[in-house]
Length: 292
Image 1 (tube, rainbow, N blue to C red):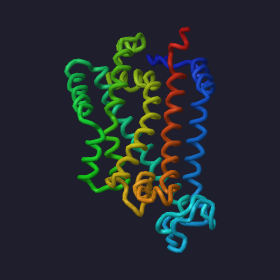
Image 2: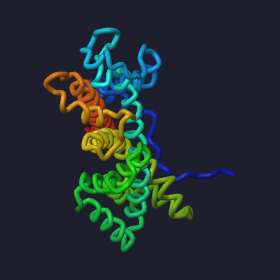
Image 3: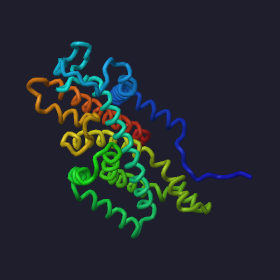
Image 4: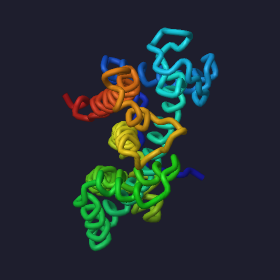
């Protein structure tokens, strides 16, 4: 018995065109290279360094970079900055990726249901999105962080709670444009259920904007974690993050500027890299290139 699928999957030719356009985007490749190196350094680096991120040596306080075996110097307690930077990178990148996954899942589910169902369901869901968006996300983030116990898990959840609305809007608009396409109408004629059509037929064809949104959401999550931790409401010492490293360095900008420059550079590299990747994916997945 022959079975038919209503799904309209991209052809291998289209996929190769997308890959070729992405590989031709120099900034995207630069961003991908930088974030890959940064991630590998954070995963492997701490085990290769001679010092632990929590080891205190008061005799080595404020050692400048490249002195006494400390590649990036030491902090006010004599802790190795390189070890703390890489351990902080593990936490900051993990928070960013996990918050992105949570916000993408929530935003995608809300956007798919609102876009496909329409009517009062769309009105209720999208007005809820508007309600969240009408309140400045940074104030909501700070209020939640101040009210709840600051831990990596809690900060991740808080960032996800304040980041899913943009994804929902993107997905809702994409689903509304797809739900009257031929492959969706064919699925209805075949008697496929709404859930099947929404998540097995329409969603795969809306993955382009979702993937782009995911890369930009990682950058936003890393920046929000750093911001909240810098203000003292995020991840708390002795557990390092790039944000609380900046918090501890602000009073030593004149005497030990590397304490602020190094974690600040790490945040800049991570956020810029993800933005470059997002720009490259957006250009590669833009179907208008195929119509020219």
